[in-house]
Structure formats: structure tokens, C-alpha cells
Length: 334
Ligand SMILES: Nc1ncnc2c1ncn2[C@@H]1O[C@H](COP(=O)(O)OP(=O)(O)OP(=O)(O)O)[C@@H](O)[C@H]1O
Ligand SMILES: [Mg+2]
Image (cartoon, rainbow, N blue to C red; front, top):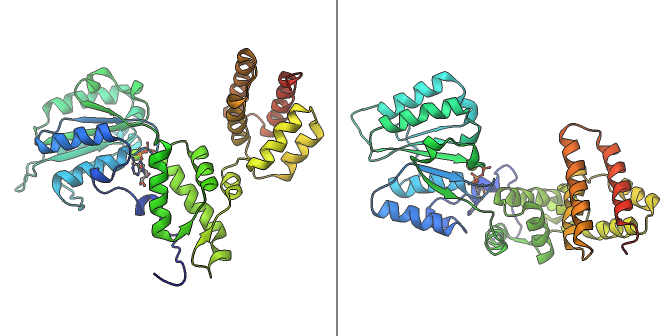
């Protein structure tokens, strides 16, 4: 091991630590086992991978291809990848048709068409895939990937085996993070891990990016040491959340209806974001013991303010309104 740590901020860790084989995919065990069975039986259907961001859909697609073809090398006549923005172009449909029907000297055992963001492909265009799938030779396999399966039309769904991906539970998240930290000679304590998990909520891409970003901020001051030490506050701050201690002060001041103090706390922590504050308040409210109806009333208010931000409302005014509403709703509770 080197005396000094190395930190290569140019290489995104999400790529460096992307699983290469199905056996390296964490947590999605039902999916992995079934795909491995398909390979064993040499019978792969068309596939749909559906689920939230950063849970391993793209990684699993490429890991499957790796395990089927036995190589990392992506060959132009074996794999075609397109996403929703490509698919609105008419020539993409022709490109896919040509790829499907291409019969060269070398006929690979399997050819894969990966269609990312399939839920964003217009329904009329999805309809065209139904026909292409039907006409495709048996060695051509489609892999559709999407976040919202509700937006995929039935004729496509019924021609594919559907696999749902789930946010990574803490146990798997923690193992992945430990692996990266060990490899990068980083030390993070449980508080930092909790903070990353609290923010990323099972989205492993966000978790790894957050870890790499936070470390790049403290790297210089730690350069001469053998290990980098990270404080959880940094993780909260770069994600637009208030550090835990500060949030505690914020919530106490809310209960005390001390609007000046609440506003001062926010003014002293300019790195928080409105949506970060809403999310943090939401998870705090969910943990409170007070009346169920009161809780529902507050949660619905948070939803309302969050929605207004999506309509480009002024965040400063919305935060002021949010604080006032919360104080009114919390009145007399504590
Ligand atoms: N199940 C998993 N096991 C191990 N690493 C994972 C897993 N899921 C995600 N990751 C990590 O997160 C990164 C992003 O994952 P991936 O691109 O597969 O997500 P995705 O589900 O396709 O997300 P999106 O819906 O945004 O396209 C990977 O490079 C990998 O480092
Ligand atoms: Mg993806």
C-alpha cells in the first residue's frame, strides 16, 4: 500500500465500481438468479427491467450480456443501445430494423437491443416495437429499461419477461460502500454512512456520487494522511440538507414559534435547498408521535409546497410560507 492516499476525481466511481457480472449485482437476487437460469438453459426471453434510478438496471443488462457472451467487449453487430430521445427520431426505428435483420458472415449466438428510458418513448412508437419484436429472428433479444412500467403499453409488456428492481436496503448499500472505502483507503464512520443512506434512499448511483463528491471536498486537507476522514455534515450540506444538529435546532425553534430564530438558522446555512428542507422536515414529521390526523395535515402541506416549487414558484417566499404554516399546524402540540 502507498504511504499516501491517491484520489482520482476524474474517474467516476459509479463507473469504476459498476458490477461487471451478474454475480456482482447486489440485492436484486430474484432477478439475478432467474437471469442466471435463463443463461444456463440457453433460453433468454425479451426483457423489461423496471424500477427506480440507481438500482442496477443498466448494470444488470450489461452484466447479463457479459455472462452470455463471455466478454466485456461490446461488439457493434451484437449490441445496439438507444434511449428515449433517440427513439423519437424516425431513422432510429430503421436503424433498429436493420440491426435486427442484419445477416452478415458472422451470426452471433445472441444480439441485444437495449432500449433505455422506454417509459418515455411515445406510445405510438412503442406500438412499432411490437411488430419489430414479432418479426425478429430468435437470436435477437430486446431489453427495455424504465423507471415507470405503467407507461409501457400492454402489447410490449406481454412479449417480455418483467423484472422489478428495488432500492438497495441498508445492508447491501453498506457492503458496497465498505468495499469502495476499503479500496480507496477511506475511513468513514457509521454517521457518514447513515447520512448517505438517508439522502440516497437505496439509489446506489446517488450514494456513490455523494461519497466521491464529499471526499473531493476534504481531500486536500487530508492528502498527507494515510486515510481520509469525512464528517457527516459535509454529506448533508452538499445534498442541500441541514446538518443534523442544525435541523434539531430548526425543529425546536419551530415548536417554540420563534420565527426570528428559524430564519436566522436558515440564513446561517445558505447551502440548504428548499426541497432538501421539505424532505428533511417530512422524515422528521413521520417520526413524531403526535396525532395521526395532524401528521397527515402537515404531510399534505409539505406536498403542496413541494409541488409549487415544481411550478417555478419563488423558493424564498415558499420557504417563508412553509415555516408559517408549519408553526400554525404545530401550535400547542409540544
Ligand atoms: N444492484 C446493484 N449492485 C451493485 N451496484 C449497483 C447496483 N445498483 C446500482 N449500482 C451502482 O450504481 C451505478 C448506477 O447503476 P445503474 O446504471 O445500473 O442504475 P439504473 O438502475 O440503470 O439507473 P437509471 O434508472 O437512472 O438508469 C452502478 O454503476 C453501480 O456502481
Ligand atoms: Mg440505467
